[in-house]
Image (cartoon, rainbow, N blue to C red; front, side, top):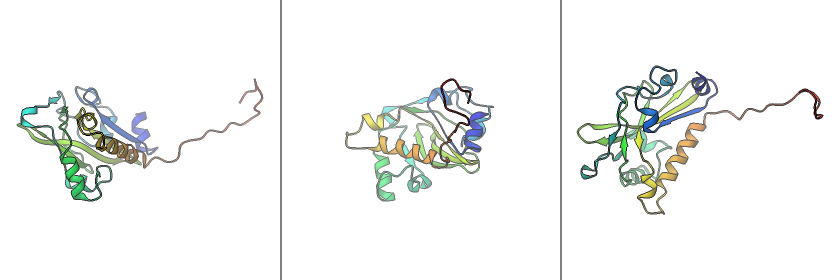
Length: 184
């Protein structure tokens, strides 16, 4: 309930990622399940990568190609090209359908299944939430040349987008004297 209030009332950002968070029962049925942009259903397993069929590749949606979080190039075509060159992820967690108001920014191609949501975002109350349903995004850092900054750029833009709606930090002031041993 405190996480839900943090996002809805305070304007905070919530990022859910990783198989430990998204598989099994997890947050299903909790108030956090209301905050996330995809239905938390059908998520009992991780679909591992199959290198022979080149599955688990990232494909931008039309919304993703223009969203600031996903931009890697100066133009939409440069952004699409750079995303097409990222190494496949190590797997993904199949998650349910997008909720009303959700934008799916990227999908992941999965053998015999087709595509599934990978990056989904939504506004929730005064805040924002995001799901990253992929596994091992570190591959974008470790399997590309050092000069390619896809990993750093993407995760930096995620942090900025999630925090953008939050108001200034809270400050607390004391009332009373400030002598050692005094009650404040």
